[in-house]
Image (cartoon, rainbow, N blue to C red; front, side):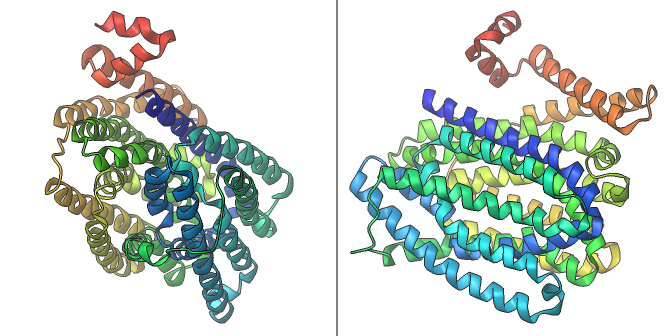
Length: 484
């Protein structure tokens, strides 16, 4: 478990940077670019993401599983990587060609053709990133260090070169820079680790499981990305900018959930493969408790501080996004649980088909709700659609999971976390009586709420997971002894 703790720790550090860097960059970018330019970039980015998913063919998830299985056999590992790399390269070239044709001939897209050219370059650069190799090898230290350094570089470049709405291409181009640098470093270390060969490849054996994962990923992306695309076609860039701001803020918290899910996938794959169900059950129950413990206070905090969060991180021009953010606040819980059921249970058990069925249901719900609600409620309608879609998907995934594996929902922790977090509204009200400045209300409320929540979980509810963490972390070990 020592390696697992280290992997989880590195992934949490990585997740924290995914939280901190947007906190640093988004307030600047949203104010400098303005709602219209930010909306144009978000529209192009979401359109490109769909093609990234298409070209990836499910390899980012499938590759982690296959590398984890082959990691102790260097010859098999090299062959597996070469096969998946070849598949990705061919699909990326095709996807880039399709994106070129669509962005060239559709007027709505051609008006910002430079953004889509950057998107095409990102598509081609994604071939060489092959992050799934390092995730399957559990090289989370390397992933974390590389990502942090590259992000520090791109943040510096953003402050230097993005000065107004006319710099939206430069702003989006920083994503291309990240892809190119990451791909260069990754390929250098991969070639040092294994022998890549493009002869005697057994590509066919990967296609069936890949297409199942791809189909699931594609339909999932429809309801994750097409809300913005539909919003863009039915409204305008300013409305997309409002929705992009609320979704960007809501998604910051999701990175922490995803980090733990990613750290557990290789270990769970091995546990299920070796039929070590006791270990798998322990890991899964901890993962679910983590989502509940962290997701509920995050959701409650976002809901009660939506105005201040939008004002501080996006600016007063984006205040119409506050209601969208409130609607999206619970998405962190639904997505966190969905990642546990799909990535940590169904995927290691080779139940890709069930993930696909849940995704199909999500697409149907998303498309119906988006076309019904966006014309009436605009960006708020897109937010309602996203929230309800995620709720439907997580319920279906839970039903599928229960037929294969015993999953216990921590009802007691759920109720305790809800009750404790409900005091956040009172804390915010009391803080607002002393100051009306959004930055001060936000800072003091978050500080007091975090302290309050942790102390209540430790000293009143005696949260076992927190006590275990404290007992491992020596500087705070005295707290665990004090509680016990």
